[in-house]
Image 1 (tube, one colour):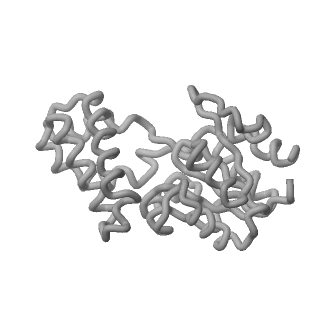
Image 2: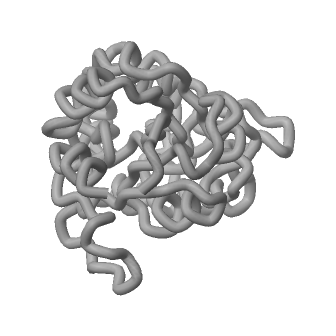
Length: 235
């Protein structure tokens, strides 16, 4: 492997995860307002509302002139409607802000230590994530922002993974050619394959229950984040 200078990182389920399922968070917020809501029903409704909104207005509606805040408020309201709790739609603004910080998100095991060790080895570091503009504050609240030279969201880039344009913008920000950069993420299509399609190296974080991909060599698979530097050094 050519000497790497830049490491880019996915965020959700690579560096950060939700502290609890969306349905539980939404149900707790509803109960605090005296509303009865089942977490399982809210989970199903959220998946349906999020999926429909993503298909209709991809990448937070950026191409249609919508703000990501309005995009999310519509998803939350529709979630409560689909779950049979229409009065819960009034919680949309509160829940949008609830998902901005460390009371909702937490670093995955080994994330902070791995990022710190990569920094100590002299790598430039950046985030490449299908996320909205709240990501900067979320990373800061979880004490991870200081590890990165830049944070590139799909909302800011105007392109979402697996679109190669977001990786090309990351390479521009990082100031390196693709062969000197590697991307780390948990999604085979959006992270591993998409980064390689623009000429970058990539590593796939294997999550629990994830099926092995036959075309991903063992030396590209991370059993945990702590294995990254070992694999880089072997390469």
